[in-house]
Image (cartoon, rainbow, N blue to C red; front, side):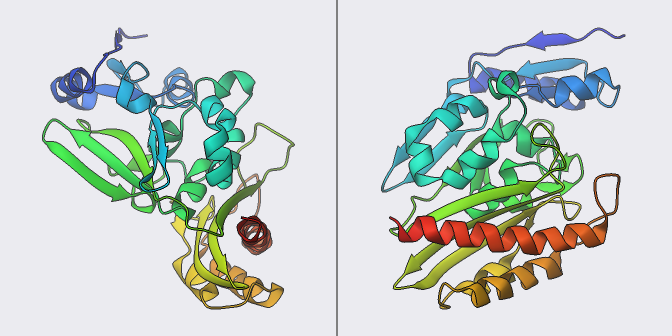
Length: 289
């Protein structure tokens, strides 16, 4: 057991100052549902914890039909799943957030923490990739914006430097006849890690796809943007054939491992199944708008 300093700054400036001083000795806590477990297991041994939950910028949910969504990185998933605006405009993101942990965990876990933990199997990340989310990352030296699919660089690793904080996600306002969907496969009914997770966001006009993005989770060392799969749908009619072709392209970029939860071959199969399901469901939701 070693001594740990705990700080709960009330402003972003205070948090950045603490991280700049502590460097590699500090870890940020945006909910703690991963960090606390890692500390108990001895995987992480920070000397200082900087709790971000009291910083207003990281607790923001702001939506406008012109500018889209600004979602604070430390907003707990319970707030996301209960937000009527998010349910209406970003149902796939809400579906991903709803799958993290139990009711008690939902009041602590956050989308930002889910991403910055660096797990390839994070449930909200494929949904964010499908939506084209941009991550606003701040340090004492300035601000940079990174596409969400570029944040995780390896299991447990991200582009964030020790003195940086992921402050918010920015997601464009959905166009007319647009929607999204996220689904995962797990061996149990709840509270498990995704064997495969797939998110899709589409726009449908006149019976054809005019835009599409697909995000994959748990099928590579990092979450993936299945760009060729999404691009293949654009200009095609909403049909079982076009969706099946996109699913094949999604399977082609998956490079899963075999572990106790599933073989690589099984995961490849699931990518096809889930891609067909989420694209079809997102298209139905889009047509209904």
